[in-house]
Image (cartoon, rainbow, N blue to C red; front, side, top):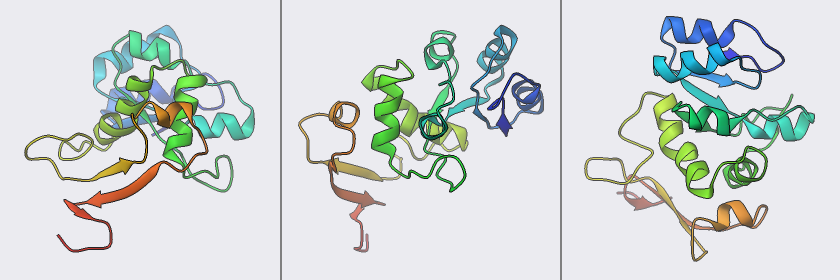
Length: 167
């Protein structure tokens, strides 16, 4: 559900009440909104490319994470308010502007995103999960946050096979 992007309103509360998988944007939140997200299981989808493009205030990810809310980090790629499809850029914004740690931003971009889709077969690497991942040309995933704009993906693996090959 698209909720509370442009101002305070009932969007987050409605999303939590109806059991929505996610409430996207969550820019303007009351204490009651944060409490509802923390207790409902509805994922707070944060889309920092929108605030970067529109110069709107960034959502308070730190407040959500500290309250125990499951957070997803995504691009919201669209020609109206966020024309970026770069997850590394959004991870960098998560760290710089949303005050996430690099580990939190990476988790929110992977496992948090999977949770927002109610998927437990993606977003993590473990036995039984779908083997979709990116191999970075960097010594650490921290470089996603600290080297914005630098193409770090060396290889993409989908279903256990390099992209473009059959598994």
